[in-house]
Image (cartoon, rainbow, N blue to C red; front, side, top):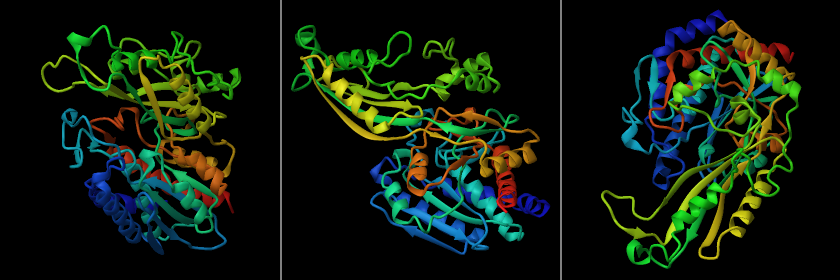
Length: 456
């Protein structure tokens, strides 16, 4: 691997500047006004693939955002890795909390600061550069395909159908993904599980217009008050979700596996300090790591209604809204859960309001076996760079399309993440350590090498 490592070192500044070019495109998939930026980001990826050395690259239009595909076939009989990533990013609000403009990437304190620095432009771009290093040094011994989409942050609408239509083109032995995190810079880990997701928007309507809170307050139900109470009732004092049937299909993790999971280092005091909270809150009977790894959650992602401008306005609002998400665990069907919540939330609504629930998007949970060849290759790759065997962990996050890949393409995914908890993904001041960016590139080159050897 000396040739590839030397190439990475000689070109690291260019790699960074090329990543910055991608980051500068504000490709926010959830905001319609950024539709042109989605196309620009797709075109940037196509050019990046071609420069890196693919045999061909193509942008495939979809009903949503384009999918960028590229491939390098060195030998039809060789093993094939399909790299998945996404070029869309989360919105930047609240913009006033950013220390620097979110789409003007900069480096300070050894970190890249920008929206998408980690999730997923920085991590996905590592794959392009690792691939380039091996192609340019003639050390690539497996076939590589790229599938980079523009809708992961909104549930990858239409990508499953696109995969089904292009199943032959996407044939591979494994899907390789970097869109997750490591335990710490000196404790490498491989994500072996992802939680599923249900996401809704609810609307609570009271009176037919906003009312004077003095003339009507106390006689007419306030939709915001009602909504807050309804949401609170969805989780009991022990952190147990109260929706009937919610836990019926949950795959319980046995004590032996829980004990193995507990071997992963976790400093609760440091965790609280980093978040500036005095105490943690989760489901009774489980540890903080288990709360995010093997248990379900229910969270309000946004809530609004009434007057939120500067100064006071004594108003009793006619409507209240909330965006709600639930993280799911293996065996729970996201479609079933989404319907259970809709029916329950509408059923428990008091007669003095009307409630509408709209299901936005969701996905299934995913578990990766630790005995498959690609996982073994990933272990060897991390060990080669970090000098430690990686710890298998289950992530609290969701990448809904991963389970779809398994259903549609029949392929497992190995999740080689290099992000850190401190990277503030989805939040203001997102960042990604330079060291992780470069270590990630090097680790991925080792994966290609070991995977090709194991698959011979």
